[in-house]
Image 1 (cartoon, rainbow, N blue to C red):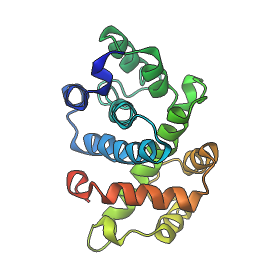
Image 2 (cartoon, rainbow, N blue to C red; image 1 turned 30 degrees about the horizontal axis):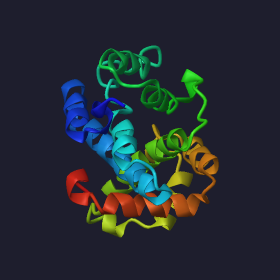
Image 3 (cartoon, rainbow, N blue to C red; image 1 turned 90 degrees about the vertical axis):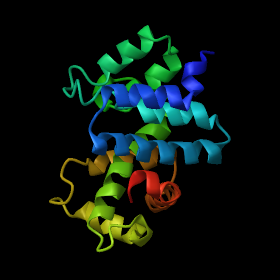
Length: 188
């Protein structure tokens, strides 16, 4: 197997080469935190899983349209010698690619993507802007508020937990805890 896929520094450099937006980089790091924690929980390869999460949106800033993202990223990774499993996991995080989420990695990435962004948004509206104050009930309450973080698809969050086979409140708590462990890096 190509070592690049397990080399976090290589993947982080690739992310920052294509992504300049601090919020997009922090999103990648938040999703990585959640996916790595699940890899650990499931006894999977944390480096590999973490790097898939880190790079899932690396092409988004340059190629934000549904016609290009995440397809351009997949092309770039293929040219760099990343394996098909890694690339397909990234492709599967967007429903419209029609890449089946038929592995635990694919299901985990999908389940963590929108939720990590939503937890970040909930954190930013806390008086302290600290993830230490974020609770499952406040995330669930904000999910019902259609005007809050409009860009986040609530159905994707619910579907992600369902596909993982984990109750939504447990999944939210797990991701909050994973993000808390990296709160300095995430700025939360």
